[in-house]
Amino acid sequence: MVWIIIMLITLLLIGSIVQFIRIRHERRQHFSMELFYTLTVVYIVVMIGFGLVYFVLASEGMVILRDEWLQVDSIVDRLAHAIYFSGVTLMTVGYGDITPIGVGRIIALIEALIGCVLPAAFFVQLFHRK
Image 1 (cartoon, rainbow, N blue to C red):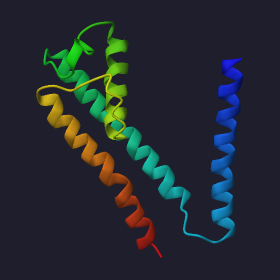
Image 2: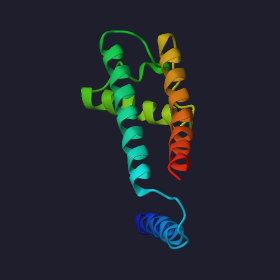
Image 3: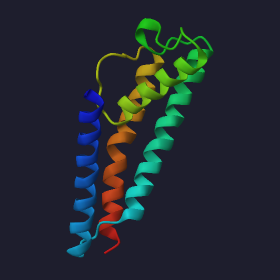
Image 4: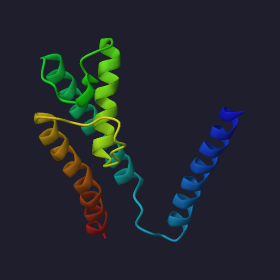
């Protein structure tokens, strides 16, 4: 039952996004699918890149996150935790379940700054194209 509700909400969200794009296109607004896809790909690349940085540093024995999230479990679990933390940091969500310590704070700060600047840079690019 829960999966059905999740599927319905997902379909509604996808339908809303499609409708938004369609309305923007009909009004001849300056919405660019190319820039949207580029922004999405850049976010994914940055998220995975920083996730790999966290993973490699933790694999070398550096304590990056509190509670040793990246020091236990299998390699796949550690990589998944690193990418999850990277995504939460990049999107500046900050759930609070993972806390960076030491040099991890500096890396997370740089990643959060990139996460804030990326959308602004793409919006400037979008309006600069006029």
